[in-house]
Length: 97
Image (cartoon, rainbow, N blue to C red; front, top):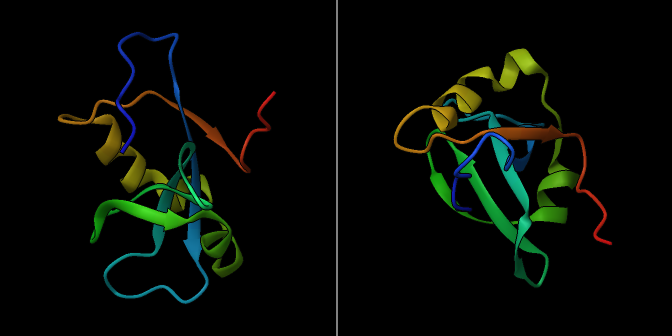
């Protein structure tokens, strides 16, 4: 998972997605698209599975954008200790210039 920022000015880009066929264990996944692991993979986080690699395009195809109410629990977990993220929530991967 990406390293949480040290200051308020450094925010971590995150995309919250809702699985089209959610399980009883998790329905929202947080994608960290700028933490590119190569080959289309990026870091991700789910309540049940915690963090790991995810195929960015594969997840996008199997999910829809999550609403703030749907991702509130996952976001709160990642903003609390030990993670302490400050987020820049996006709908899609930012372009790299």
